[in-house]
Length: 186
Image (cartoon, rainbow, N blue to C red):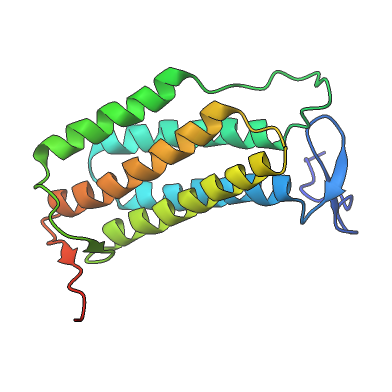
């Protein structure tokens, strides 16, 4: 028999964390890892627009790490879980930093704020960046409410949003799409 995607256990607005604790589907922890899932979906779209094979491979790795982040956020820190939950490593953050530095080597110096747009690849990178920042803010909110968030999760999301900003610029560079400078009305 095929696996059924629906269980009906959430029909009354509750869901379970890894560890079995039942919480409301509006719980901050659920909102946070749901936002990470949304980010992962946006990255799938970003990847669909990319032509650079190295970038595509890295986005695949990032998507894997986001599943790791989601698992961390979905786990009840008060429970002993029987399954093995993958974890992030400092090298994951370092990889993003190295890729940011490499892209910046070929990009012109930024002398103005940039308005997102110019090509779907660029725009989708900016959308993913904004969703990443939201996930980061939600993690900070969790911390401020004394909910466990691994410090490396917050660091990774912070660096990932930086990566996505630079990736937007890099995608425009590869596609030869000019950046749209913000020219404030004065």
